[in-house]
Structure formats: C-alpha cells, structure tokens
Length: 121
Length: 199
Image (cartoon, rainbow over all chains, first blue to last red; front, side, top):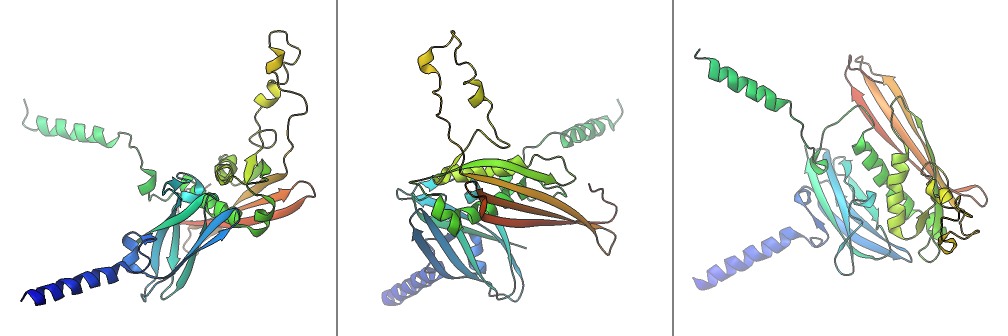
C-alpha cells in the first residue's frame, strides 16, 4: 500500500513539474496555460541584452494576449521599472500562429529577464 | 413624517456617491477612448523604445563608452487634438538616459532648458562669486536629433461611423552629416459608431 501511495505521489510530482514547462523560470503569468512556449533565448551584445520568446497559439481561435518584459540585473533587482521598456504590450495571435516576442534590455547591466503573460477574451 | 422619506434620503445619498471622483489604476485601466490617450502614448513609446535600443546602426554609434548626445527636436502634431507631442520624445528620453548609451541635450529643441543660458547671462555681475560661474566654452553641441510627426486621418466606415487612424513616425538623425540612422513608425486605429462626435 505504501509503495502504491509513494508511486502515486511521485507521478503527481512529475506531472506538476511537467506542467511548469522547461521555461517556467522565464515565462510566468496566467497566460502561460493558453500558449505553448516553444523557445526562450537571450543574445548578449557589447552594450545590450536582447531576449526572444517563441510562443504558439495551439487553438483554432484567435488569441488576445498582453505581455510585459521585466529586466533584472546580476543581483536580481528589477531595472527600468516605469520606463517604456517596462510597458505592457498587446498582441493578437491568429489560430496556430507562432509569434516571436522580442525585447531589448533597458541597459547593458541587465543579466536576465522575466516575461509575464496574460490572455483575455 | 412621510414613510418614503428614508428611501428618498438613501436615493439622494447614492446619487451623491455616483458623482465622486475615482482614482484610475493605470495598470488595470482598460477603457478605450477615441483620442490619442496616455495608453496609446505608452504603447507607442514602448514600441519606439524597443526599436531604438535594438537598432543595429544606433548600436554602432551610441555606446556606454561614447554616448550619443541627443537633441529632442519637434514632433509635429498633425492631428485635430490639442496634445503636446513632446510627451512622446520626453518619455522616450527616459529610456535613452536609462540605457547609458545616450545623453539628452538641454540646449536645443522642444525640451530646451532656458536656465542654461540664464546662468551664463550673469557673468560680470558682481553679486556672484566668479569662481562659481560656468566657464566659457563648456557647452557641448548635440551629435543627434530625434524628431517626428503624429498624423491623424478620419475615414468614413460603411456603417456611417468613423475610423480614426493615428500614425506616429520618429527618426534619429546624425547631425554631423544629416543622415538618418534610425526611423520607425507605429499606428493606432480606433473605430466609433455613427453619430459619435469626433475631432
């Protein structure tokens, strides 16, 4: 009985880890469940850092979403809060469309980013 | 005392409540207006900021080691609305400064700061300690200028309503030779039903 319970708990844990997806560190928000995050990459250039997140709308209906990139420095502190690089952006994805969301960091001190996704009807 | 008096008092109280001023949370504000409002301004500057910071040519001539000095020039307001288009360049200026790759000139353009000239006009005034006056030849001329245009077009829809199309174009020119090193545009389109007043 104990073994069965342990196996069930392990399966549930594995399922939860599976739900989070491989890009959960970077892409968060309630909209994550409505799209497939296909790829996340960052490009470091001499004076800046750019990010690209690839999303796919797996639904046969158009999807309206808005997103926001938050940039972090090496210490994990948010950079550029309140400036135009921190603004919400609205997009509309056609059925099964793959969209590449790109953003450039507010300055060269940025080390990482978070993308917050929200979908709405 | 009539029985309906308390109900009347309550109705008056509620009516009074309805006319109070509310503070709008910008993060949760989904209201759409026919004007080019602050949400449009925010979206436009966000688009332009990303485009400008990511511009390949801009990256070559605006670095942290050698920042470009930008004069925020005029943004022509070719709309029927009374709005100050320098809001666009000033908001964008925040991004430029935060990047560390640009500086903003306070000497030229729509955001000119008259104080820079005022503090130099008092040279020779015995009331001032000469050692605290600004030295001659210390001002820097800008290397680039950011200018643009906001245009509005009203188009009649088949149902009698109107489409209001706003086009914003911004460009960054290198002043040394007059070459445009970055340019981008974005549009905001709104539609209203027949009979709604539009500028």
